Image 1: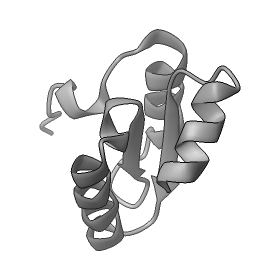
Image 2: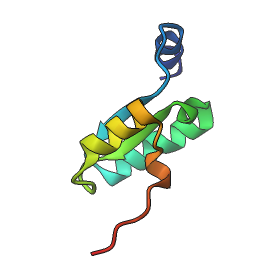
Image 3: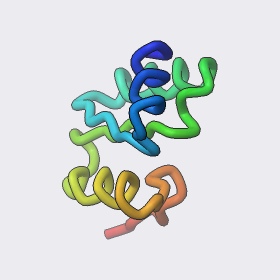
Length: 75
C-alpha cells in the first residue's frame, strides 16, 4: 500500500478513496493506513453501510470533505 501511495503522490494525486463492502475490512484498512501514515491522504468507505458512498468519496477527493468528520445521520 505504501509504495503505491508514494507513486501516486509523486504523480500528482492529492487524495484518494477506497470503497469496500464490509465493516470489518474497512476497519482493517483504516488500521493499516493509520499505522503507515497513508490515512492522511486516503479514506476508506464502507459501501455496505452508506447508501451515498459514491458522493461521500467524491466529496473527499474533489472537495476535501473528510468522511470521518461527517455528521452521523439519524432516522
